[in-house]
Amino acid sequence: MNESPTAAVPPDCIALGVTSSIAAYKAADLTSQLVQAGIAVHVVMTPNATKLVHPQTFMTLSRHPVTVDLWQAPDWRPEHVSLAERIALLVVAPATANFLGKYAHGVADDALTTLALSHSGPVLVAPAMNPRMWRHPAVRENVRILRERGVAFVGPERGRVACGEETEAGRMASVESVRRAVEAHLAVARRAGLRGGRRLRVLVTAGPTREALDPVRYLSNRSSGRMGYALAEVAAAAGHDVVLVSGPTGLAQPQSCRVTDVVTAEEMARAVEREFPSCDLLIMCAAVADFRPAAPAAGKVKKGAAGLTVEFERTRDILETVAGLRREGQTVVGFAAETEAVLENARGKLTRKRLDWIVANDVRRADVGFGGDCNQVTMVSRAGAEVSLPRLSKIETAAEILLAVTAAG
Image (cartoon, rainbow, N blue to C red; front, side, top):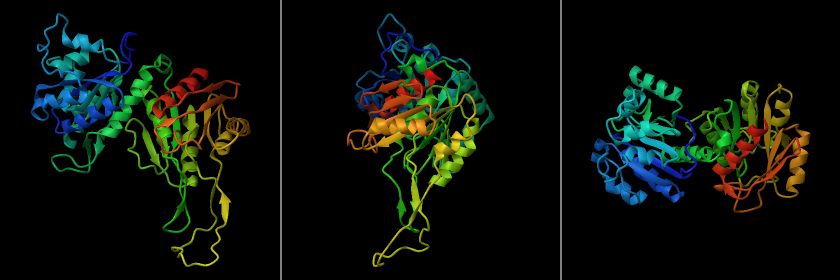
């Protein structure tokens, strides 16, 4: 299931399978977002899915014919085989319990299931169904079978479904979550070195931290968390077990890894201390506060308060903390967000904190770094290697970082 597609396969061409879940309407938004990201999308619908969303919708959004019937294309090559040879990734979103059952047991009775059995590359599935169906033993067993074969899942998530239930998982993952997972899998598909290696336990930190000034205000920074989330998602797409320790970001949480939410620098330090001993690779991407108010005000500080003075104290240095916990075979990667002497400061941090790699970027630039979708970084290793990347999307940057770090390890 996770074999790489042939060299002739376009790196940004996918098939999107749409099944007859009420969440099929989300697939239209997903198609639009993927096309806007430069990805060629070939939609394959089950016959019942066409009763929920008309194929013309997907044809217009994808700018490609939509396959519903195996017999609709007048070609000597079977459509499911032809399409399987042209795609780098098969995505099924939404995926019903019926589809999961047929796919797990090799049933090929429509265009989508025949495509699924013909495709030898990576597969990403976004289940969507009533929560009672999702937790049924038969569905759980089918999911287990597919996971063992290398199929990746995104969601389902908790939240209101069409029948009104809200407390259990069953709702299709958000379009943003699915889109990011697609981009991560494509980034991995472009890089043979990210696939097929040893399965690692990867610990990633992301986002800012917040330190209370009073019950209303806090001290934080401009980190969006996007770089750390991209690293976590690419690592998961590459087949690793990923734990993400996230500060408050407002981003949709990745469905492909275990997430621990924190707010303060101390909470992040404790979470990393807890997870670090069992990880193989730590990537400290979070922008952790270096200082916090020594004594946050118990009540809201009024604007009329005269002579306001805030005394600060240092927070714990997480990288220095884990240096004392390190065992042989662990790799530690740090980030350096700098405004001047970027590489000089990054190399100093690399040596001072006994890191294996440091990833440096200039946060003065408006087109990369905090808050944006792109980054431009230079990686420096303890062994003396230096890799400067061009301006790339954060997903692509994450893939290059992971490729360099795992190849060296």
